[in-house]
Structures are given as C-alpha cells and as structure tokens.
Image 1 (cartoon, rainbow, N blue to C red):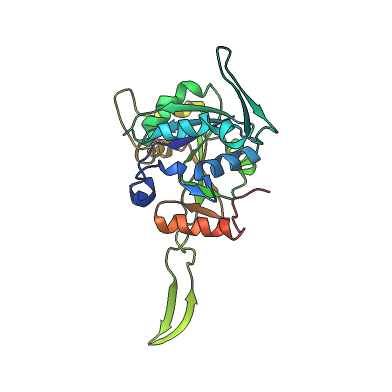
Image 2 (cartoon, rainbow, N blue to C red):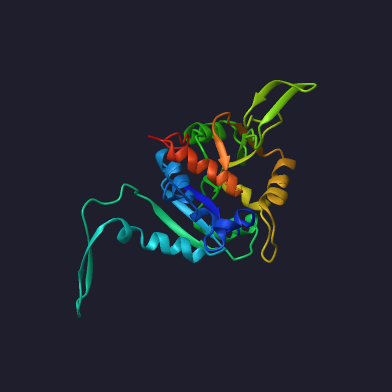
Length: 259
C-alpha cells in the first residue's frame, strides 16, 4: 500500500524556519519531520511513499538523492571508469519513494489528483507533511475496511495552546498548563482512501483544497468515516509547535516514536 504525503505548502506561519526550507524538512532532533512521519508509517509496514512536492521541492529531492552518501562511508574511484561504492552497513530504512513535482502553488486536492497515476487501483494512505502522532495505523486501516466507505479521516482533539486558569473572584481555584480542548474532533490528517474517491477530485485546470471540496462532496454522499484517536497528536504550524516537539524529542519523551 502506498502512502501519499502532501509536502508542497509554503508553511507561512513558520516563516522563521521555512524561509530556506520546505516545512516537511524542518528538523526535530536532527531529522526532518518528514522522516519522522515516514518512519511512523514504515513501523506499521507502509514503506512505499509518494511525496507531493511544491514549495522548495528540490530540497526534498536533494535530501533523498544524497541520503546514502550523507550517512555512510564512501569509496570513490576517479578516472575514466569512475565509481562510487558505499561501505559499511546499509540504512535501516527500506523505503521506495516517488518524488513528484505537483506545482509550486497547487492546492491539496490538486496535488493529490496530479499523483493519482502513481497510485494504482488500490487503497492508499494519505497524510500531511507537518504532523506527528502515535496513531495505530494498522488498527485505523482495519477500521477503514470494516466501515466500507470510500475514505476514512482520523479525528483528534486539538491540544490546548495556552494554560487555563479557573478562578473565584481573584482566587485561583484551578490551573491547567496546555489542557486539551473540550470541543469536538478535528481533522488529524491521517486518511485511508479507496480508488473511487477520484470522482470527488477537481478536474484538469481546476485548483482546490482537499478539505473544502473533495472531502465535503464525499461527506454529502455519506462516504466518509471518522476514526477517533484519543492519543498523542501534534501539528507543526508555528514556531511554538516546533519548539514543543523539539523539546519532547530532546527529553526522550517523543510519543510518536515507535521503538
């Protein structure tokens, strides 16, 4: 099964870090968040990826083209019969990756339509290139198949961004640091999708957000399931989000890491 990762946005709310990098290449613990996301999928057996590139997509291409040489010793033979040989143990990542240029400014549904020829006539996973979670992807896929709809979205509860104080007059009665909100579920960004979902995508020459077009048409047909996830989930929209994830990693408390 292939996993499509949307990697093309500009990450404008994280401009401090995305001025020179696409957001999926912003590092957590010296590894791009894209690597963390892919590792999570690979831990559940999903090791074929289609990356929808856009803004500074060449940075992502270069990262994977140089992946072997950056992490291993080399033996280089110069001259007419030049050659490069990798020494030592191979990388643990046994991944197959398609890096597809889907346009510098394309919206998410358009990016998905552009890589559709790479997906084949089978179920595939879809996610964004800026969020990590400890979601059980195997269980989510089983849920998707059991429900039998064209698409399944993961619903999560957004983490609170600010501490919450409860008070009686000037007396503090309760203090919670970064509580989870008590509202409903939001789009957590981990999908499973069937081939017939294609009919909801925009046509050639149209540009559309997945969330405001295709998914709403899918909902209107009663073809979207929600898999509720009550565990860890965090997107990386802002510098504060990045600092939070970096801090978890530095302290050895990254819940999205599968040992």
